[in-house]
Amino acid sequence: QSVLTQPPSVSAAPGQKVIISCSGSSSNIGKNYVSWYQQIPGTAPKLLIYDNNMRPSGIPDRFSGSKSGTSATLGITGLQTGDEADYYCGTWDSSLSGGVFGGGTKLTVL
Amino acid sequence: EGQLVESGGKLVQPGGSLRLSCAASGFTFSYFAMSWVRQAPGKGLEWVSAISGRADTTYYTDSVRGRFTISRDNSKNTLYLHMNSLRAEDTAVYYCAKPSRGWLTFDVWGHGTTVTVSS
Image (cartoon, rainbow over all chains, first blue to last red; front, side, top):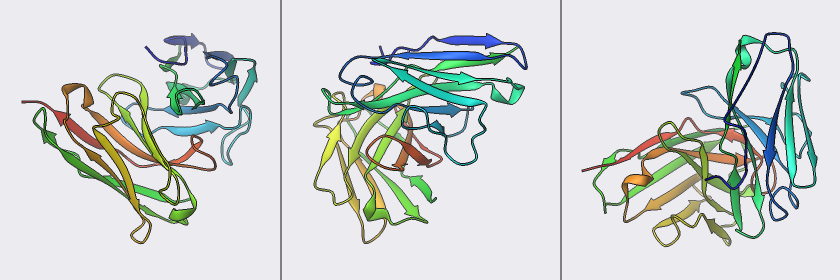
């Protein structure tokens, strides 16, 4: 049972948009920045979004992040088959004094 | 941006011990807190432990506290995870990860090293 809650899976057609949610609490998302990671099976995770809505260099603007209260979302527009991966949200939990991740969301591009 | 290379993972019996290493290059290692993150087979990411740049602050997830010890040698640009009293549920790929700032915005990840706890 992860501290952050994500839907297990989402799907959409190529070219469409998808939103992945991440729900937490006042001690984690409500108090700290959220990051999002993309993981293609068999490889290490890759940072997609940091500080709630910032993109590292090299990440296309098709990827966006937002945060409101104790929830965060990752948006992906113009879906491509190469976007098929597992996506994780993560943040610091001030009550646990440790990092926490969501359980992950598997994106399928139909 | 940097590179991280983990080593030390192997098959170990329940109750055994293991030390993982993570060699860092391409950035000023001592400037950054570092973490270990693991992923059990078919499961999601789980943050395990973190250590500050000067090694004066450490954090652990509850399930490993008292059994695992994180440490670092800034003169060797190396992060360690000392694992004792290993359990089957510790079986996972262990990644070391560097944050771009703070504790948990990981912009550099290693390729991972596999720990299997089984008799």
